[in-house]
Image (tube, rainbow, N blue to C red; front, side):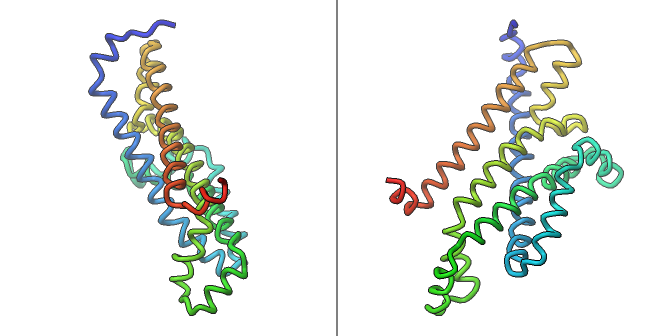
Length: 214
């Protein structure tokens, strides 16, 4: 397999722009997914009967084939970045919702009772006690969702919004190996980099976990 380095040099700016779009799509989808999944998880923890239906709904949405979902969205949002973001956000919900719920449920009952006895309000208890304890499980879900979304962004190239996925289309269309290799390597590198950054962020914001592991 031969790599045409001159082609990479000539298209460096274009590749950089595609990488930027890839990061933007993945990042915004993750942010929107958290904005939806977090309050949904809080409701499910507060009222456990809603957990099953919420999990079922996010699970059904997750199983919808990506191309079918984009086709369903196109009549409403067109071949736009909104179509990509809506579809990608939907695929983050199951992972984020489930991990946030599991993280909050793992907070020991005696810890909650101690915080309540100290006069903590519900919001303060959530922010100061429950979330820090649940953070490792929540961040694990964010890492999975981030890596999954980075991979799925390439599919949106089929509607003209795919970031590095455009390189795959170029390679297949021209029967040219170099764009395929560049797209594959950069997608993998981006996923690994984001995963490591999130792991480092968790390590930094949870010093008590470092002390426990030591």
